[in-house]
Length: 315
Image: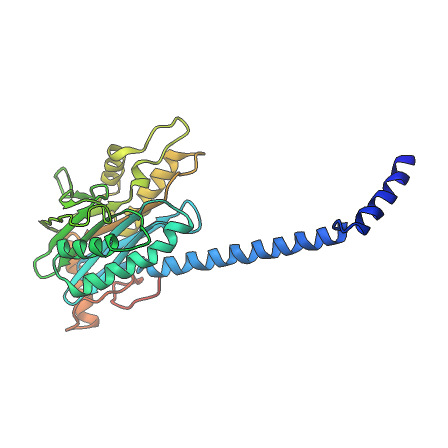
């Protein structure tokens, strides 16, 4: 009782000397909580903008099915994917900006802008990469290094022309054949001012499936500190082969997360799956499109319940 009585004058003396009162401290704490809540809401909204920029997440384009997904470690991701219709061809890209969180998330918008502008002005994937690399190297603000896979699909020849600038080599699965890795390209973007970028070319035959991914997938660790590695990815890609692009993607993503178990991924996980439909299903798909739109050319569109070219916004 005496101790409590002795503290009352001390509190009063502290208040008179300008020390913050309990009430003012509570008010300050409330302000901090409100500011934190507003910051969290702003980051959440920025993450939703990122998802809309990385779109469409799922689409049908003629004989091709494309699905992409990012599983971010934090709200904002340094990974991105992009699908763009450029006249008669379709451009697909997967990128990974060094670092993660807010810094990488802020650079993501700039990288996508550079990529879209270059892709619209230049046809050759190697030239697109060189132009984005030049712009990054000229930045005064020291942008982070960026790994990028960029490819063009021509539906008239079913040829994929691509350039891989430092991303883990995408996997190409073919019916009854082994897995091919798409390694042709050049250095990571922003690393060498006059870097050269070569192109690889291949034909996408009926049933072929392309799996592009960021290094967060193969470097994902479990509780025993084992990495998922390319061999496990190849095995789960083989297991998912034959499915449509979206189910195949989520089958692989689920396998990676199951492998990690209770260990949270240390980096963003990104997949982009491109599948040319097998001959039988492609024929049925084209027949249905002919019934719905007899002379319509392939259009960028999200996957509908029935294979129609109508689109919907990103999820």
